[in-house]
Image 1 (cartoon, one colour):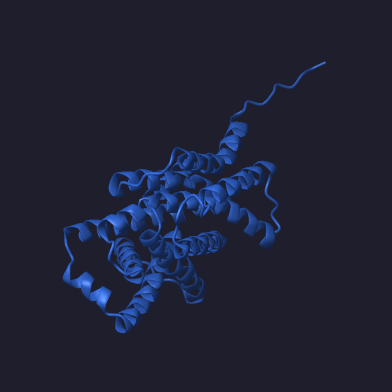
Image 2: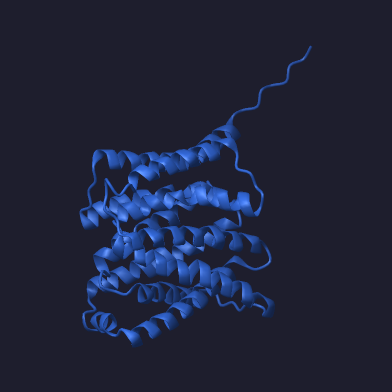
Length: 298
């Protein structure tokens, strides 16, 4: 059941790329990140007020910097430079990076199934992102790799809190602190390059409002609420495998909103990557639900 619940925020996150291109295409990434994080954090604080203790501010600042400020900024760079389907499918490689990270840092060796599926996923990604078959912005690809590492490191930090801090406090204040960091960065950027910010102000319309409502309400307030709550109830690697809905949402929303289309071979590679990201969890679920063999008597 937790895997299915993990697909809900993943689905909303997968729509970020197409929704951004469709409704907020001219907005600077730093401004988009700030507008996504800070209002959602303040909304959650209003719903359930909380205040961190003296010794909790440092870890919350780290979470806000990695999980929110860096990650949100990178996500919107991806959204504005890569096709939404490619962004969504590329993010399914998170389990591979999560396994490698925990192998190197925590000496937690992945099982054979996870390692095998991860290896196949890497091979499929190699063909999908081949410059000879598809033209992708290198800045967007770099942002994708950095965003993946933000997920892995940030999720590990979040899970390490365990019962030390209430999940609502973690959620609310990492959004607020990350939003403040992004707001400061966006202000500095606006001073040095005011043109895109003035363009946003002068041309704000109903489509922009709808996009912001989707990104702030569903992608962030709801999505991150479920994210932090679920991380206290399942492993980081398990959670990342629940992200199957992310690429599906990226492909579908890209097709519906942006009219993106790819070759049959490219779609096959995407499907293969999605299957490889889901297969380890499917096998584990089958093993856990397999009835035990009755003991024999002599």
